[in-house]
Length: 112
Length: 112
Image 1 (cartoon, each protein chain N blue to C red):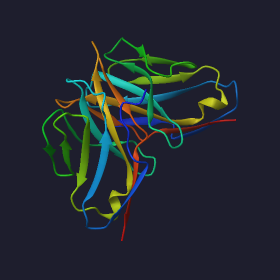
Image 2 (image 1 turned 120 degrees about the horizontal axis):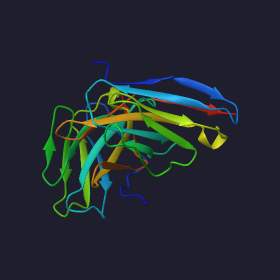
Image 3 (image 1 turned 90 degrees about the vertical axis):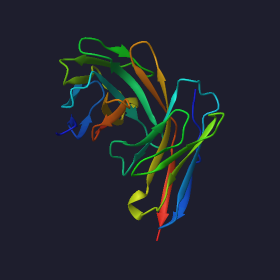
C-alpha cells in the first residue's frame, strides 16, 4: 500500500540543481509530506517537510502542487556529498501516534 | 547530546537464537519507533511506543517483541531468530514542533 512513488534513480551534475519528484496522489488534507535522505545505509536524516505551502530551509526547498498530489525536492547546488537515497514520506496522524509511510526512494548520483 | 544510540552495530545469529537490540535517546521524546530495512527497500515499521509504558504493533510485528523500559529506552527482542529477519534495524524517536524523526545508526543483523 505505497503512499508515495518516486523514480528509482537520477543523475545530477555537481553544482547544478537537483530536482527530485514524488507522487502522493492519495494524500489526505491533514497529511504532511516529509523528505529524508540516507547516505551509505546510515540512519535516515531529516531534510524538510510541508503541508500545503512551499518550504525552504538551509538544505533544500520543497515545492508542493496546489492539489497536493505531488511534490518536488530541490537541492539548489548539488555537491558530491549529496549522493544518497532520498525518501519522500507521507505522515499520517492517528489518535496517539504519527505513522510515516516510506516509499522505495530515489538514488541520487551527483557526478563531477 | 548523543541523539539516538543503538547497540550492537553488527550481529550474526544462528536460526533459533534469541537477542535483544537496544535503543536509547536523550532528547526527552515521548514517541519511539523500530523499523527494519531490507535491501533496496524503504523502512517498514515493526513496533512503536507513543509514550512510556505503551507499545503497539506496526506493519511487520511477527517474530518480534518490544519493551519500553523508561522514557529513554526502547528495546526490540527476537525470541527465535529466522533467516527472514536478516535486515538492518533502525530505531527512531520523534519530537519537536515539526514531529521530526531522529534515527539511530542502525543494527545490521545476519541470521544464518
